[in-house]
Image 1: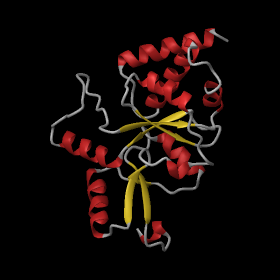
Image 2: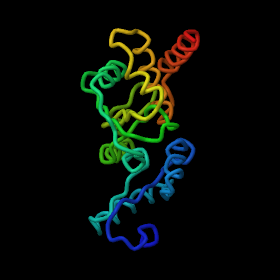
Image 3: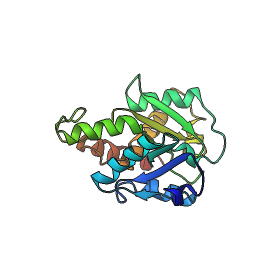
Image 4: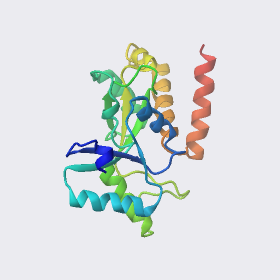
Length: 204
């Protein structure tokens, strides 16, 4: 821990629980030269919480829970973009955040609150399965769509008319792409994603 913190008394330790499933997030952190630890056993996660209990100045965060560390400038919140993505998520209470990542990074990513995910993991461990659908896909208790305002597609979306059906399809496609980078798509989501791919490609 001292080696990771490089002499600092407080800060954040980033980790991954699945290098394959979280590979895109890992690449983003690597591009910023932010070291990421591999916690691929139950003991690793428990030990991290034990260390947090001993030192409240140190926080452990899985790489999909803190994307602010990757910011490459000032974010610019847009009411129009928020309307597009709120509609794309099909939930009025959907949580949306805007960050300025690199222009070549994904248009959007899913950010999962660390504490709610830990609670969800604990419930699954004890077979409580809260928030899990019939096909076994766990839905995070607190999921935030994080939109990259420097991405070219997002910037283009910001110039489109609110009544444009194409804008709705693009926003929905961006959202499903973000889901795909976070977890496997459900069968209905995969069908919709492929349909949107075809519709968008046929428009060009």
